[in-house]
Length: 230
Image 1 (spheres, helix red, strand yellow):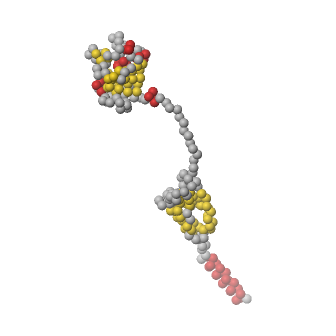
Image 2 (image 1 turned 135 degrees about the vertical axis):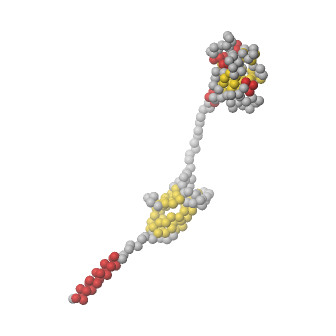
């Protein structure tokens, strides 16, 4: 009886000691690795991502499209994605180091047709101003005479050098840097009476256009502006 009791106590002590030294064995992990490529050309897709479906673990493919991910033994559901390509889901059974390659297909968009109406950009060009004689005649005349050059001097970016002068300075330029045209012909001297009046007869003028910048190449030889009188 004493022997049986002694054996029972020894067995209990052994079980307790064994339980104290027991450590659960961690689940074995294996490497899941491979390449991510485009399906049609087999080109590598650097930056593509591979992750578990619950997003708990994941990785990004390197410059060669290669990825490597350490996962626990068992079944895993992987999501492979890349910008501009259709995402894929794969369920794999991991028992050892696994080599697997993924081939993604690009997202194909339907045809997009863009239509627009052409607008007159010249009317919205801040460098281009067109004045009719009706507009010029609304400006108070100088000594009873309507002057188209003085009318232009009232627009933005243009001023006169001195009081009474018909020469215009466009954005800091001098009067001789302006190209003045009358129906396409160059006017070299556009004023008279010591510069107080321009040579244009307001009764014979229909409109005047001034281009203060970005004028076409055919208007060469001047720096400041082009004044086209018609």
